[in-house]
Image (cartoon, rainbow, N blue to C red; front, side, top):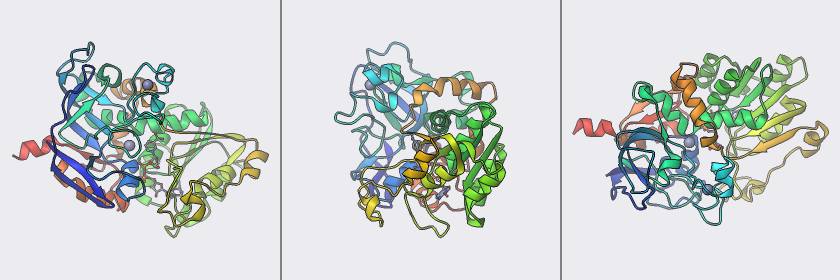
Length: 384
Ligand SMILES: NC(=O)c1ccc[n+]([C@@H]2O[C@H](COP(=O)([O-])OP(=O)(O)OC[C@H]3O[C@@H](n4cnc5c(N)ncnc54)[C@H](O)[C@@H]3O)[C@@H](O)[C@H]2O)c1
Ligand SMILES: [Zn+2]
Ligand SMILES: [Zn+2]
């Protein structure tokens, strides 16, 4: 099968790989119809992780079931399914509690497994023609009748829509809250969409890319361009000097200043200032325990110069981590089905798998208009 494989920093290629296949009786085999490129793929693409060469990337996957293992009872051949990026076993203590982003059995020595991800277990990604889904009954979300018609919406259930929603859950967003969101990438935009769905009274989204900020506006948010002045001051002005009730971090350790220079502590320290005293901050942007390629000494060891005194004095709270996609994907799927959520608004490109290396280049450069890339492996088949 054709697949997009990581060979080294900024070197990904579409090559022929052995077909994905059923390996265990609980597996499901999916023919991928849509697979997205994610901001998380870029940490690997840029060589900022210990991703091994030769691995297939891709953790935002959707497709048609073409084969099921003998022990699979619920999922049938022909079902259209969306796969949470994190893989759960379904029976460990964390999976049982709905914390499927922290499965204890699938990636021994680490809490959490995912497709095509550095440090998240041996699982191949889905930027390919086929994907093996372990524990298929548990991990497949069977989609409703309109799965194909709304494919570009449903595929967002694999990661960024539940992740954006998780940011608002971690921050404890409630109806009537004002919310500041750092990052207008796909995740930040989905956090804005989720905050709006939850009935937030005012949503402010911070970034410096006008095209992305424009999308934030389409989701009902007030755009805040940090290249045009202090984001914190703009948020304080919009909240009568008090700060937002809740804050979401949707950027992560590669956050930059207005000159494009990385300082891993910018967003966290700004959130402490931009969120009110006693407010809460949800952090879904990725921070890593080791980052040897960073130019900052502290960050190399996964440390940061954090304004803990200010944070403590304001009596704020922080919650962090990978999204437990399965905790939200079914409800969010219903919102898509009835037309109350439309995550596909952020889609900028639908391309064949062959076009993936070029798409990585543009998305990595945050080139204007490259907001979210959807790869359609069947486009290749159609061309043959
Ligand atoms: N927790 C999870 O489960 C989970 C899941 C998916 C993605 N993520 C992470 O979420 C983060 C965002 O993902 P994405 O796909 O939206 O990525 P992205 O890289 O496309 O978007 C990040 C955005 O942040 C902006 N930005 C950079 N510095 C900033 C600053 N100082 N202030 C405000 N905005 C700033 C960039 O301009 C960009 O638009 C990444 O770290 C990704 O790995 C986490
Ligand atoms: Zn992702
Ligand atoms: Zn588990």
